[in-house]
Length: 180
Length: 390
Image 1 (cartoon, chains in turn purple, brown):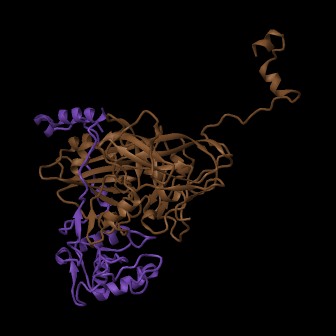
Image 2 (image 1 turned 90 degrees about the vertical axis):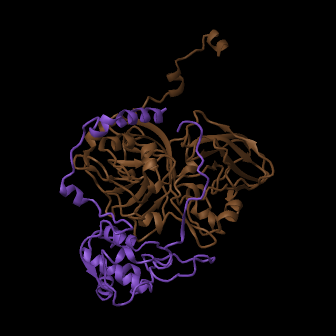
Image 3 (image 1 turned 120 degrees about the vertical axis):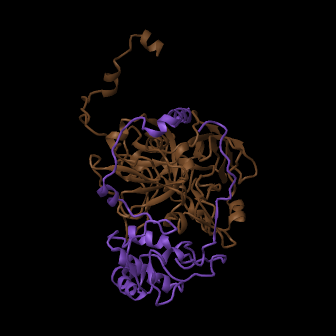
């Protein structure tokens, strides 16, 4: 019953004229400050990545200062999860899921560190520091060389070891015949 | 009674109770209610050095009916509960839209609303059950589950208002918690029945549940129901966020993982008698539990009292609502003999809740999420109740 009312509203809004003008006219365009206050969502194609770059060497220092306290000096884990190793374990009885063994996209690493780390001060790192931390973690996992620079161009091109390790939900797409 | 009255012995009820003790006034009326001090049910959580992240479990062993008090609704937070002044909060809808919008809560509350009773279940609920040693009680093994009445505005209405551009296929939802938790939601779901909720159980959503605005995706794993919602970005691709790649994906025995596993399949569990409880004496009891399905309405719940050899249909409380907690019950007499009990739900898609063994045969033991197998309890001869590992 609620679905029907939604459809009615949506159809009403979907007639050609309404497609060009809002029905209710609530709200206002967002201000640049409001957009800035949102997290920077980074797409797997690199969309949304800011200017800046980072190296493995800089990342080593960033990691020691901001990350090692929880993740261990070499990403071996402590209060925070383990960040390295595990490649080749996913099909074994004791899989170790890490950035290197499990994460399918390097852009996710940038997005997550930028928005959620360090745990007690999320959003603390500036874009060059995030690029550097990403570079260090990718190097720690054997994915990039020591001298590789990570920036908005190079990051989306990195092919993570488990890039093809995921399949979309294979369960049958069943749904009640009743209205819900 | 009639005879007593006829004999002239009828006395006012109050006087009969009070005898020689005068009445004593109760507590005064108050502005906001508290439960009885004799009621002790609380959420449970693990001890941790980082109490701002983790899960707290609803005490479903003490639940009655189908709604969870907001104060006992399960929690799964990633960076603490933000304090948000609704007068300052905005929802920004942007990305591939004709007219990006910034909306206040007041704006949203002016729009046509819907109220709907739904269950919410963490994708990781019953994760304990994949292990050799399964959960010892129902709170810690099935308690990342709650039922609420949600009130809000259909997301489809606001997407029509902003005008989704051709080629758009996803909506990236982001919360205003410290870590800005995000999930990618298929546009088809957003247009189908997603709700921008500001009300829960007759009042504003609690801070623990996303005050002042929460995305509700009926039937979908809890993590997609983004709390403290402040951004909806319409895009042409999933953003492969940490919580839809590294987490909330199910690793299969062949080393491949399922992703975008949204629907919570049909599931049920007996909440009384359940692990850790004790039946104080022999005699009649009401065996009861909860059933739910993210794909529809619970059609049938069967109960076994003999370890799965035979099953009987339980009574199901009406009304039965789609994608909502459904209470079942079975009158039962404990006669001092050991009973191995479990429930099995069937929803109106025809799906039957599997055994734990069938789930493990199909998915192995490393998939973490979406465990919906049956839970067996043993009622011992002395009335104590345990899981089957004890």
